[in-house]
Length: 228
Image 1 (cartoon, rainbow, N blue to C red):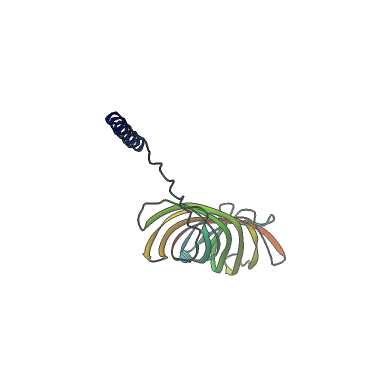
Image 2 (image 1 turned 60 degrees about the vertical axis):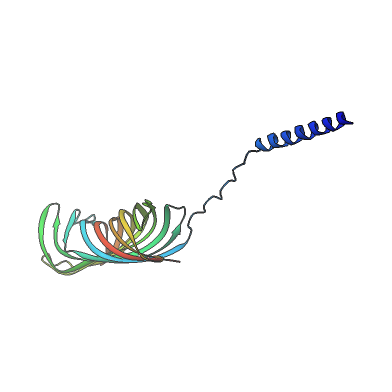
């Protein structure tokens, strides 16, 4: 009888020891954290700034084959609507327009004299991609550019050469640029940026004539972006 008690007690001790050892072998399996989804919210930007033309040229293929214009400082205003493709990449559509005075004209390097009353404008319709550099703060630098079309209008009513111009037409357009956004409130950011904009081979018509124009300019702009 005592032997049976001894055997039962031994078996119970061995069972409890085995259970404790098995418990020690249980390993916590890490649970995968959910993957963060990119911010795909929409936003709207309005902006404006100053324009410094880098080059304004035209070629009518006849008397004036290498026209180059001097300009005053101009202005630009625009609006863009877009959304986040990934956490760092934004895509948007931009509509903007710039205008500046034409002050002098030369042909093939020969000065033809001042323009007393003349101006040109360029309207851009662009698809842009901007890459945001995440700093972990409300300060976000970005870089990128865009492609699209540009509509050019040129008007000269009084100049030294006495040649009136009223021509307009479409060409290809592009821009490259960079800037920085500062968060100023929930879903509102101030945007300071630089753009190099260009319209290439705009085919202008008017005055019973035609010409091909090219415009490139530097733009310093400030804007406000509101997220939705």
